[in-house]
Amino acid sequence: MGRWEPGARERLREAALELFMERGFEQTMVADIAQRAGVTARTFFRHFADKREVLFDGSADLAQQVQDIVEKMPPTTSALEVVAAVLDAVAELAGDNRERAQARQAVIAANTDLRERELIKQAALTAALTDALRRRGVDTLEAGLAAETGTAVFRVAFSQWGDATESRDLRDVMRETLDRLRVLAAAQ
Amino acid sequence: MGRWEPGARERLREAALELFMERGFEQTMVADIAQRAGVTARTFFRHFADKREVLFDGSADLAQQVQDIVEKMPPTTSALEVVAAVLDAVAELAGDNRERAQARQAVIAANTDLRERELIKQAALTAALTDALRRRGVDTLEAGLAAETGTAVFRVAFSQWGDATESRDLRDVMRETLDRLRVLAAAQ
Image (tube, rainbow over all chains, first blue to last red; front, side, top):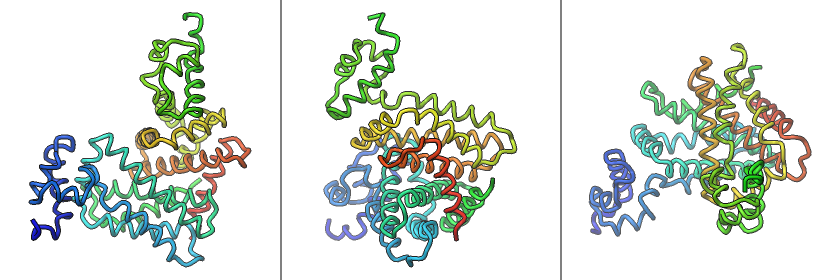
């Protein structure tokens, strides 16, 4: 199996998503995913703890990346501008493949456990961003508010970007959504 | 047991919260809750499907109440002002008892399943608010954004209100948090 190993993780991710879409998440077994990816189940488990984790690959790295981005921002940058920079970076990571992102969202939306897991991962990311802002000296309330607002913009923009009528890339949709938030907040 | 029935639901909620705090959620059984509330387990199950539901009592009503509030707002009221009115109403419902609210949050924070359930309930409420705004003619992106922003303000304000150093009522904390969001969004 050695010669199949390069790219196995990526093939497993693609195979899993295809099968989840074709058969449903519950009806797909690890053995099916491994077979479609052309690897053994043992190889599957070298990369992922279970079939659910395939959908959330990279989210631990993301929290670290978010914190790194915040640390690199000049100290004078406002909390919301820091959040805007984080959204740009997240858009670059999450927005490379619209069809895959849509498929993933459809699989998650159809399963309550997966939706709960997605929300917990988003909450963890929001908490990581809040902590990173507080380390810059932003007060607790403002740090929480800026981070939660960033997550709100992400969720709305991601959903908009997944719409069939939307042709812009995720980064542009995120920026427009943040601008819309500014307008919304300014209105009395 | 008949003469014990009035107030049973309320006593069960209090008994459950006390026991969850004393022993932990996992270690508390329905029989313990019923005993402390002075009712039978059968009475417990007339009010709640399981011990977890005691913590989320009233959240289905809340979605309906949110929609009712939105429907009653004048058509000229801006999306964020509608959200502000919803936050006022939620503060009134959720903010009557700070100690109970803090105890409930502590129990939920200590248990991943409960945290996931709380997040799902909040997401359902956000979706109900989004739908209600769309029925007023607010476009999809703005409706989602206003609703998600409201949820963000709620989460941050609720956490702040639970802080030992905070003495204002929840409604005031919510309003200040929304004002802080306006300032945050206006800053470049």
